Length: 101
Image 1 (cartoon, one colour):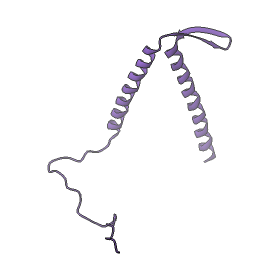
Image 2: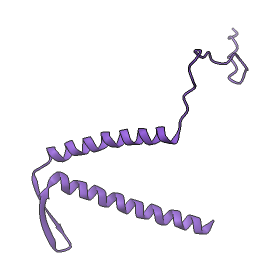
Image 3: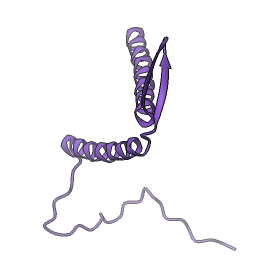
Image 4: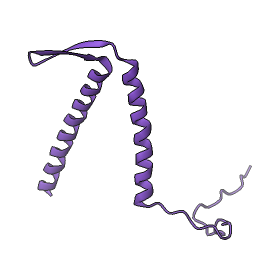
């Protein structure tokens, strides 16, 4: 029993058909920035909804001090502190690799 030969992906064939009078869309820095702005708007909207749904007061103790603030805000501060910590460690690693190079 023989099977039909598989098509060769590298074989030259006709180019894909294009609709006449349509320019080819190119990816630019501006389009990448626009996409990032739209994604940021979605993330910030979800973050705002999260904070507004978690307005119960929470007491936070840190380095001998204590404060009462909404739970959503406390979690946001914790996330920001974690992101800053990760960014500092990443920046230190990048500097270390650049010096080694």
